[in-house]
Image (cartoon, rainbow, N blue to C red; front, side, top):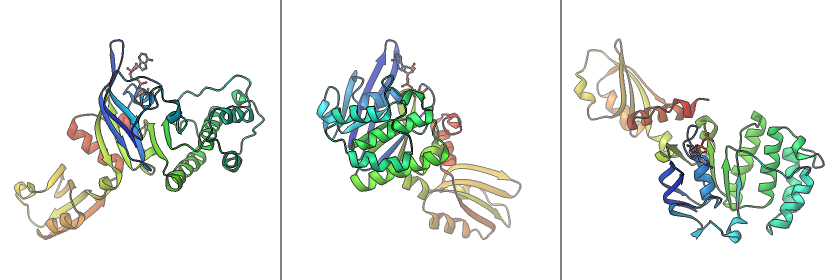
Length: 300
Ligand SMILES: Nc1ncnc2c1ncn2[C@@H]1O[C@H](COP(=O)(O)OP(=O)(O)OP(=O)(O)O)[C@@H](O)[C@H]1O
């Protein structure tokens, strides 16, 4: 389990993290969303033990991460800007990882060649940006990590490779109880991949959601009635949004789908459609409540 409690981190006069609380359960994938400068990289680097926290606590499996080399053997961080030794090939880099990580699994490294299909003898610096990212993921997965901390890992990958990498990671979560925290600017990128989503805004988590609850409990309702109804009849609904276009109402409501359907059906509607919301719509309505504009977090 990854845990941050009341975590703060300043850079001179910039409060990059202002009391962040995050829990990532073992064997789950937590997606961290936020616009430029929100504090995602700072949070991930502090969770990875690269930055020392100013106050609060950071732990992985109950242990402090900072200056804990034994723990860091099982906690892999892939940064957004990658670094490789000059002149090194993938094969050289694999040898280096083998010498550092006692958990290195050569069989896994060989098996993953089928997924990544890169030439291990080519100098990494001469590979494209997307190929270099593949190298980083390949090496990280060959160390058989217990925890992966990923800063925009899909950036630069083509759509086929994005899906392959997501599948590989989901497989490791299922097979080895791998725990992942992953950042992105793009909700669409994370929605089919994460169990939890947290939105970081100006150094604080402003919204955190379990994906299953999210999709289950919120609906878009289009409804029209034979004769006009008093607006008050809708007061008992948990409405996030209400709009009237001619005689048709559009509601965004929270609650059990059957209960929502039954509620409106009692008014004998001439039209009643209950539609699922996309995750993007849910976040826009929810964040509207909190008072933030998040379109820039969701749509690239
Ligand atoms: N090493 C540093 N020195 C000084 N300020 C920093 C440093 N790293 C980050 N900051 C500041 O901390 C804040 C958070 O930056 P951070 O890189 O964590 O954001 P981010 O959410 O990862 O952004 P992006 O999506 O653009 O990568 C910003 O205001 C940034 O300028």
